[in-house]
Image 1 (cartoon, rainbow, N blue to C red):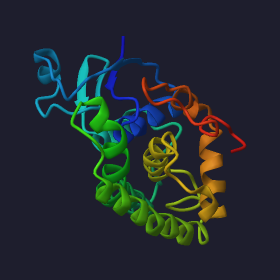
Image 2 (image 1 turned 180 degrees about the horizontal axis):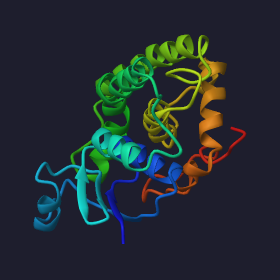
Image 3 (image 1 turned 90 degrees about the horizontal axis):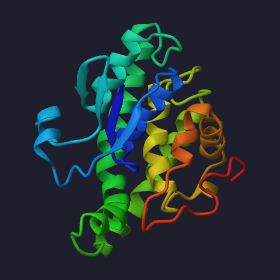
Length: 221
């Protein structure tokens, strides 16, 4: 049985889940308390991080490396452009969201509001939360600028860049930290992603102590 060791609201795990689902690769989801690593988990990934994918006898870690491995091994449907320029742009935007957006927004909102409570690390730092709430506006505006020129974030076709961005935003949407009224273009883009069959398991996530907001699983949010 293929297995994905994950944390439900982790955007890195969500990116891999979306890629697996889009490519119709069935896996068993195993929730991992990676902040309390067991010897078995550290054997799977000495870095002590999720996601970790066990696929056809291989153990794979690091979300971007996993997704590109899946893209090469299971090329249909394609999630990376055919031409080098398109692949560069998709990879650039994956790095944007997994690095810049993650550091400036996800870590300031999701990790403060949810992770600290789950990991019993104290209360949210209001300074960080305020900073994340300010920074997300800049990122939504940048996405708007991209989507005013393109059908999808990296070009005319949906790519891994869209799944990467959607993974981060969906995690924040679970805690109502995305102002969808700020940009009609971004809201329309997210509605298209959200309505894909690959998104269904994400919309079904339930995190103890953090009930879903009413709009989270609504395709007409």
